[in-house]
Image (cartoon, rainbow, N blue to C red; front, side, top):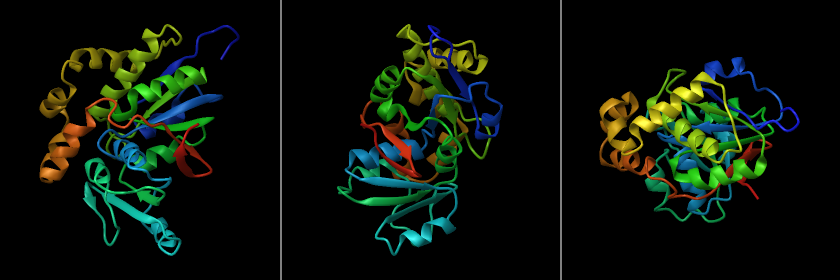
Length: 246
């Protein structure tokens, strides 16, 4: 970032596009998987978890069993194997996770978080922590790259909506700027859907349609994921582990 220039916002709509971003140094990456990983991570910290280790494979979970970690695992929306948890934010909020450590692997979200780990700071973002996250980014005063997890490297509406909502807040502060087409597209999408993002995604988002077939628990997760500020925490990644930012 040039002296006296406003920090910039850039958006990678899928992890496959992340290498092609123009902001590569001295930036914060916000990793987004609204349905459900980053929402579930914020819910777990809201429920008191001490540490979450994001992992990109199921095989990487096994060594954490002997270390006393809760193992949370999901593939294609389903809880996997003998893991103690899946990735349901509403389930996490019913659990007493105070002081516990969790090893966590999901189809898209944990892969996205690790993909963005080259940044000065990597933060999971979602509607559940949008205000706390916005304040953290304003305080950091660095360029921001929003990295959407999408679905298996394809575009997801709900992640782009969140990217637009976050970008709109940063731009409204007049302390950030952007010339990135993806950001401008996401802001336009957010302004189209902002009166009821849940209903917009219920009509249009393929992943909402996919998860809706998983039963009442998943439907509760979907509704919850579009509610702002239910989990006002800011987890950040350091040394391969998510803990709460200072």
